[in-house]
Image 1 (spheres, protein in one colour):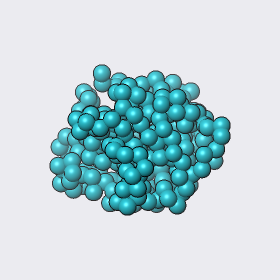
Image 2: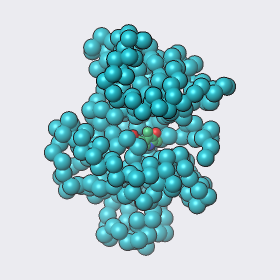
Image 3: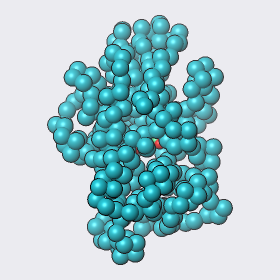
Image 4: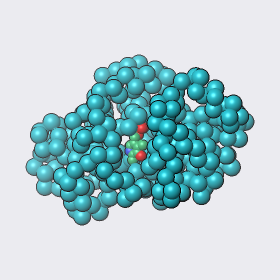
Length: 293
Ligand SMILES: *Cc1c(COP(=O)(O)O)cnc(C)c1O
């Protein structure tokens, strides 16, 4: 079932003659973050095809990806192993206790070790410890992850000019770029500080998707609010106001930052009259209350 698309009506949008639609990926599943389903879909089917019975992946203690993987793997009768950054603190937070309740095997490693998560040696050691498994990189950053996100765009049945989405690893944006119809553009909003590194990450994924590097997209790196999982009162006031006005909840780690950026750019007359924007609400509402600055 395609996720719904919803138009926002606002006096600012009327004044600037811009139309804004929200692709409600947050409604895909009541518990699990929207774009994480998309990124897991082809990974899990590939794991099955390859005859794997265990999936291993990486994430932080509040990871939407780990949370989604635990449930999705359970649903497909696959074992899951989560390699978690940092020491175990008890009691487990909601994200991790949920993952464990789905049967995920949690292993905590130091931040130093965690940095080695893409190194061959390190993965070899994991195989020695855990045996055979299908590996999904942190955040679902691979071709299969990006392929799943192409479906976000393919589902859109209205006329639009521009797609906006928040970026962590850039996997979702890669899928969006790869599936954009001719003449359409995409803007990514990195939620990490120094988001320019994502140009390289995304340009690494695109050719794997069969897409030549192209210039139908760019990043707006000025809306990170201090870095990953950092925010301020201005952002929280914005997300509160947004929910009150339109009845759509935003999280302050991903979707709040993107939407703040979208409204700011509209206010600054960045978009031509008549532009129709689709902002992808990637979900991310689990765990939000538990994160503290
Ligand atoms: C993980 C996540 C993202 C980031 O997606 P990437 O594909 O890693 O860029 C964006 N929004 C939400 C809600 C997420 O949970």
